[in-house]
Length: 111
Length: 111
Image 1 (cartoon, rainbow over the protein chains, first blue to last red):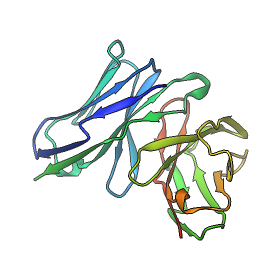
Image 2 (image 1 turned 180 degrees about the horizontal axis):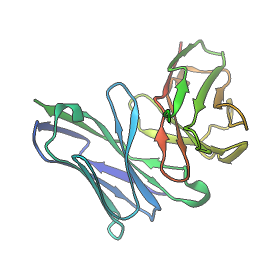
Image 3 (image 1 turned 60 degrees about the vertical axis):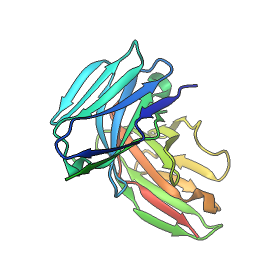
Image 4 (image 1 turned 60 degrees about the horizontal axis):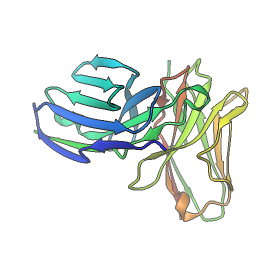
C-alpha cells in the first residue's frame, strides 16, 4: 500500500520568504503531482513530474525517484500564495487515474 | 479552450433523494476521474472512466454510487438515496493522457 506523507502540515511564512514543502512516498510511481487548493476550494494542477525538476514562475518542483521524495519550493512568497498544497502520486498503466493524495500542507503567507 | 466544468457548484439534497453531479471534460480529453473530499479529510480517488467505459472503480462505494461517461455529453456521478455522510466536495478531473486538470468541484450538502 502506498502512503504519501507531506511535511509540514501547517506553515506560516512572512512575505518574501523562501518556502519548501516536502512529500515522501513509499512505493514506485509513474508520476507525482503537485496541486494547489485555494480557500474557496478550487484545485489547480501546478506540476506533474516523473523525474528531475520543473519551474513555473516562482514555483519549483523537484523529485528524487531513488529516495522517493519530492519538494515544492516557492521563492519570494506572497500572501496570494496562501493555500493548501497537495502532493499526489500516480502509478500509470490501467490505473493511471488512481492518484493517492497526501493530506496537504496549509500555507499562510503574512504581509 | 474552456477548463473542466462541473455543475452544479453547490447541491443540497435531503436524505433519501438522488444527487446527480455533472462533469464536462476539456475539449479533446477522453479520460475522466472523480474524487471525493470529505470535510477535514484529503482527496480520495473514486472512479476513472474513458468514453463509454469504466476503467477503474476501486474507490467507489459498492452501493448507491454509479458513474458514466457516455459517448455524447458530460460524465455523470450519481448518488442514490443520499445520506448525511455523503456530504462532501466532489471533484472531477480530465486528461488527454496523464496530466490531470481539475474542475471547480461540486459541494454536496445532505440535510
